[in-house]
Image (cartoon, rainbow, N blue to C red; front, side):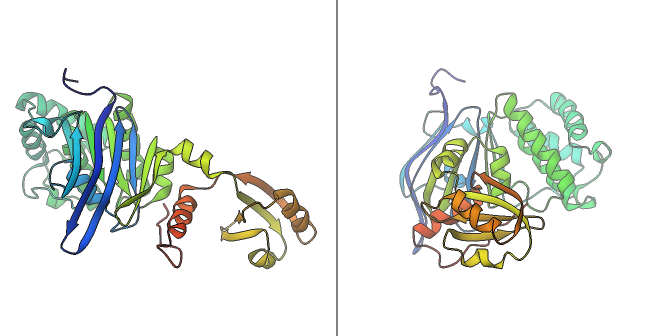
Length: 317
């Protein structure tokens, strides 16, 4: 960290606004990203996540508000300390992988000799040791995505910004990238990633900002958000006909899964009263009060804002 950097905060946005014609993409957004954290920008497609990222990285200039990176306004050379994986993937497809990665790292200030050493180490880490002399056009989509991830982090940036990094990855490759992300964070990097898949954020993030229609509807640590939202969800497994649950006066909503259901209670509902009624109708194998998921929290807040008439199609991992 340089002497002029503000301690603790890697990125801050203050009342940032951006419009494209008549569309307000980001509307008075405030963000504060602590050093050494994994921070999630969450929301549906079109919520304003990518526009927010592009303003944070000086790709777009805000119409109003202030962006500060490493405690200061954007300045020449500052982006060498940042790694950015955009949502729109792009590689020079006819260069050899080694030449491509060395070239991109050198642009960020890594000497060519050192870059060549890092290429081999990183290809091992992403389980692609045999592609060094291949061209991206010869690789699968998942392999290309891992090559682009290497290009994003090989210069050892202090801030890593990943826009939908897991899009299109199979579970094995998703796990590889997840482990690498957490390893980079353990070594001191700050990671910001955007996603519309709430389960990913719930597992990975220290703090999140839920964005809808360009506005932050929740912005806090994951633990504080879940604590504040209360424990009003029941995980229930039973034998018998549970169709009555969808019309029960103490149940606000039912989500069905292969081996159990989750019940969202109405405000002020007594779980013990619900349990007593359920056991009089079916044989209960599990009745557990659990914290609501980020997916449930997001849907609830969007509905409270009057923005949706029905549940959004938030993807599940």
